[in-house]
Image 1 (cartoon, rainbow, N blue to C red):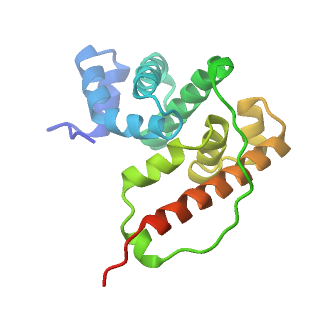
Image 2: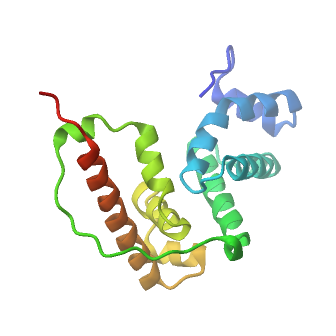
Amino acid sequence: MQKTPGISEQELIQKCKSGELKFQEKLYKHFYGYAMGVGLRYLTDRDDVLEVVNDSFIKVFKAIQLFNETQPFKAWLRRIVVNTAIDHRRKNLKHMNQVDIDEAGYIGRAAEAVENLTVKDILNMLNDLPDIQRTVFNLYEIDGYSHDEIGDMLSIPVSSSRVYLSRAKEKLRKYWNQQEDNYVRPV
């Protein structure tokens, strides 16, 4: 996240509340990387993520007067980005491919392989999940939503949310086992 010299986040938010455009740009630049990181967990196409991030910031600036400064700004922004990404996904649902996975067995993992995983490796594993599974996994495991909340957000039954999470975990185990098989142990 880019630091804004000479001004705190609280001051930046206050200036944005007063409608000062140059501070909206500073707020955007300050939180851009964070918002992109959140968006990339929900969408694979960078252009789609950029669109979601920009739409999210438009929503932020329209609603910044409603922001409660006793709450963390990042949490408020994250919720807006997540909801915007889900809306984007829902809008484009007819174009998305929802593929079921094959049954996969868990065969364990080596600690050495974990140490060699990069953030890029993990994001690639998540990006290989079907969109609905990746979305449910992110909402439940990373953002802490309940299956009831996920069902409401995605307009799916609660039981489907549980099934998609289970399938996502199985597929991630399969990817993990493939990573482990490809890991060359030092001699």
